[in-house]
Length: 294
Image (cartoon, rainbow, N blue to C red; front, side):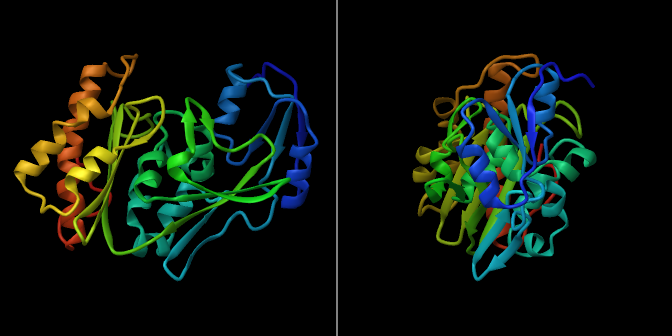
């Protein structure tokens, strides 16, 4: 593999060292965790940083644990870690369901969920699920620590609320009893980006979180659909009402992988199936996590 541009490389061994490097560097810098997006972009000459900061040796970023009702996911936790975690299987199986759809086994072994949302491409698999979970993104930099609502994270195509001198340290998800679903439309089974995706979390008080991926410049949540669902029993009429809202909530493009109209229509289908599955899973029935719904 040929890298088109030269760059400096630093490998800090503490978080303080990493933030100091970022704070004192005035040029273009990229952080390396799993590297599955970064290395491909370097190879394709899509980016040309003059410094790459490798954080894989920084301690404390591999945490994957439950503290009371709060799930903590470190910046270096891979998709495979999520799939294999007993804590995730018991308390947040939706994360494992999403992780199993990410690319190939080799990619999942290296790619981190934090890196996935830091890349901030429209089709990032983690985006819709973390939005549906009301996730908090924790960053640290020269001015200290910040906790960012995931709803404020995605600013645009490959743009996030993280500043250039900050490092994402971990994510937290406040858990309560729920049912969830991640429905991903792909051209074939395995190792494909989403043509469209839907992430849903259903709670016992008839409250829902609904998010979409690959159908807008960033992953998005639909407050309008959530408002329509709130406090109402899910039936065919309510599903039809919310499905009718989809076309006004998303803004898909036509590209080599799918047309805008196909993405729209299939998102409607995925929302319908996803609402039913999430509600059934909340009740302890429905398809097992990991079951393909489309």
